[in-house]
Length: 88
Ligand code: HEC
Ligand code: HEC
Image (cartoon, rainbow, N blue to C red; front, top):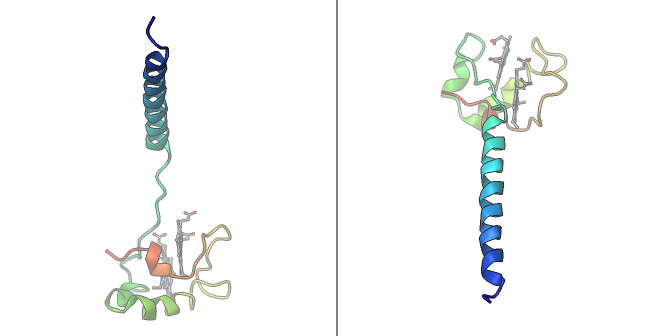
């Protein structure tokens, strides 16, 4: 009789492939998170030429609770605006 070890490793390989396919399917179905890019408009055009750090300090003049366009309450952490809101 052959040792049972070989059969087991085949089963493990099949299980592994199954899990990998399942994970891949899950990831492909997950909704894409879309972070709005820095808009090209009168409000924002000047920031494209600035250093990220300089520009980032000015954002909150408008994007704060007192500003003209407050951030939504569920906005993610916001220390470096341009790290997430890309300029291109
Ligand atoms: C002078 C005021 C002002 C400043 C300063 C400003 N914004 Fe805005 N921002 C607005 C207004 C008004 C809107 C909404 C209308 C629009 O999209 O332009 C907006 C919209 C946005 C949006 C949403 C765009 C979309 O597609 O939904 C993002 C992202 C944004 N700003 C990022 C920034 C960042 C990052 C900075 C700093 C580099 C910044 N803003 C500085 C006024 C400002
Ligand atoms: C960690 C990544 C991250 C950082 C840092 C960040 N944001 Fe955002 N921001 C997002 C995402 C993601 C959304 C889209 C949220 C949604 O649609 O619910 C968003 C949405 C916005 C919007 C659009 C809100 C609307 O109602 O249209 C504005 C304006 C904005 N961010 C400004 C800023 C400013 C200004 C800063 C810096 C003070 C900043 N963000 C920093 C990820 C980020």
